[in-house]
Length: 453
Image (cartoon, rainbow, N blue to C red):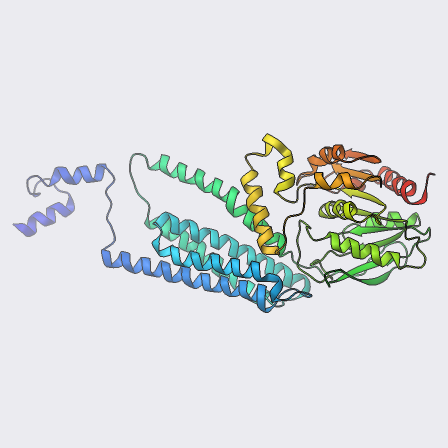
């Protein structure tokens, strides 16, 4: 009788179930009961999760150690990356320790975060190797691709095993999804931007047409880095520094060369042919511009009092910072300057409150990964440029904080000028209005460096 009753219970049949068994079975189904893995199987799955996560952490840690200490960028050494390397390894070790102690949802979240960042590292390694050939940390960077995929798969498997049923399950899942989006926006995205900013892939710089003959030059910074540069000799005893890349704005370089200016196009530290660590937000780039000014002052065909600068995007920001401290830079055009740290972000006021946590985390990430403290706010630096002339250009369709240029203009003292180009994209002023751009920019430099027309 016991075996027949058990068989009937398994089939859910009414005729042969023992009294009192049928109704509880229906009630369990109604509240969302589902079979569970045996205890031994659950333990094995958990151990496998921990092993996979720990193995992935070791691979990411090996890449971080190679990047920071064993194969650093040209012109740098292990001592320049102590903060980056030790912080990264400490965070990874902490993650490996806490992972087994987290609930299933926490494990899935940690795995997906590390997986996304590993895939970013793989993409940067592939981009760098494609442009200039595999080197140093690129080799461990390639391993981050399968590692990142495995971590995302691990996260999905953990979530699948931990799913629950119930009347409020959809509301609960919606709440978790909303929290995940906010966490990604406030935490994961800014850290990913910090990694990108301090690991910009280099590009192979081919010879360019600057409209006139040019020579290659090497600039030495005050902190011992060699920067790659091109120089078009001057025909009017004045010269303009173009920053932050040699190939980025060739049209503007040809424009200035047509008007007789010497043009010194400089790769920023960590960019392309220059030594050092990259930082897409500049921060230490004023030293590069100082080196360019010093190099031009040694040119016999130049009047050392006729040196100006034109910077684009982060180059515009760094040109403003350099001009605030280097009085030998006699005139500055900044196109597309925006936000480079949380300090400029605060200028947005209440409209920037929602994204303030993201800006703060991003600034902290860049500071740790670059080993450089955030520079002062541009609004505090710009007033120091006067009485040297300043020309601010920004795009109506730009981004990255370009809308703050009117604030920078109000902070500046005369002589100053502001030009908003409504239909232009980021640093796209020349392409939007090439003739008007040439007229306004060359007139500005003519008046500032050559005297009134």
